[in-house]
Length: 248
Image: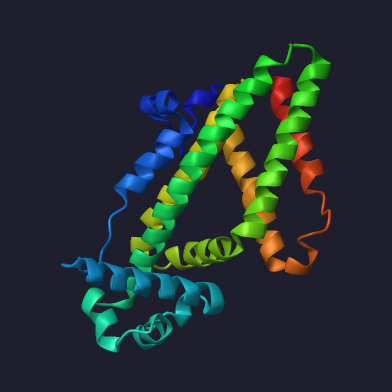
């Protein structure tokens, strides 16, 4: 099968040369806001406070809880301030998620850069025997499981907001483009990692890996009381990485 011809997540030539960190940085710099642009520095701070307040409401009450009056109360600003910067709720939601994508992209750019360097160091210390490849697969699985756990422990609110916005994007086209941009960051990061590891089908393997991670995050958010328990996450990731590296 010609994996490079798979459709859906096509990689531009520049992606390979710049790496996943370059893709994340490009997404961060390409984010555009819909609401009114502030004219003064103090106005920008107020606008950012409104966006942060809207995000807190999304995490706490869901997207449907975002209303001008509720956001103004949460941000501690007059109601007229929210309607000045955002003519409607769609603008407010779009800019709230744009801010999330921008922050997430900057965070992921640093993560992918350090992860790629670590992978190359592991590969340099690995020979081509089956036993060595198996140990490498185990190490990558542990790294991935640690990443998921860290996301759940330190960025739970962000993950909650992400899930809420993904659902709303099905009904709000303006959010759909932002959700796709965010997914591109995750996909390209996984794809670059798998390229470095020698995957024969990095595009396809990355789709599977990001789907696994997304499902694990969703299940942990759905049942937080079980988040600290061993739910087989490491076993699943280990099996997956062994399959990928065995075919590499």
